[in-house]
Length: 245
Image (tube, rainbow, N blue to C red; front, side, top):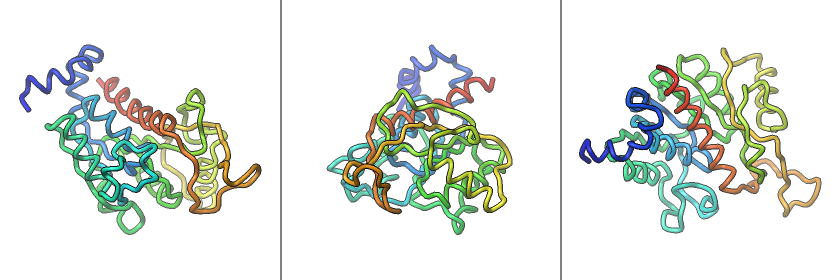
């Protein structure tokens, strides 16, 4: 892709933020953990906004139940590696971007291999409570800015999606569980960080009123909610990078 073509792609962004801010965005290193219903849309928004150095981490393959909400999930991509399909799409948006696709899981055994200190921004879109807790603790010990997604399932109303500091999140079971785990383990994030969350909590219709899903049971999810979560995470990165100058 020629320089002129890339300039044309981001011309509207440049008009809004200026060429210096656009250059700052291009120089930032971002890593996203989890590229499902939230993380996939976050990745697309970042690349369309001028982020050129992006690492995407997810161990899963596309399955049919992903199609209703995940960016790269279609009936044609079922069975393919999520990060590979998403990487191909992101490069079709900006072939000059440097996208690193890692089909890996973040956990206690692999955490050090990601070299979190080398990034400017860390995006947490992990579902696993234990792994999410570890990522938050480790990310907050670096100089990188952490932005985290709380639970995006069992929600329908996009107007209730908000951003606040982690300890101020209300009405979200995932945030409550994380806080309980931090207190139980007597390990706390070393600094504050912002979260995207919603205080809405619906029920899975198939379970009936008053019944909660069993551990590992899938929860109902809609794309307009998960995508907004992802876009808001990307917006936090872009806003911070633009204001950095």
